[in-house]
Image (tube, rainbow, N blue to C red):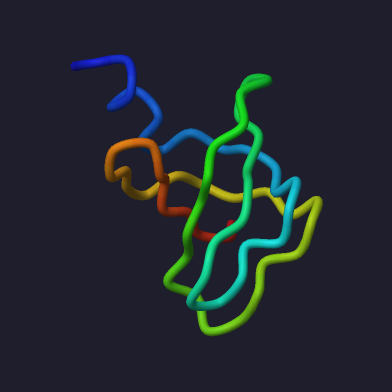
Length: 64
């Protein structure tokens, strides 16, 4: 699997609010990723999230 696919299932911390229906930023191993969520509410800064998908340089996350 490619390096990017290795992100699936990994956890990180929200560093900029991931807006419901929008995006934010998540830090994983020191790298910043643009993140989106399928949640109905914003995911606040400091929340631990899991990567459940990736499209190019944007990851999809869910709260744990």
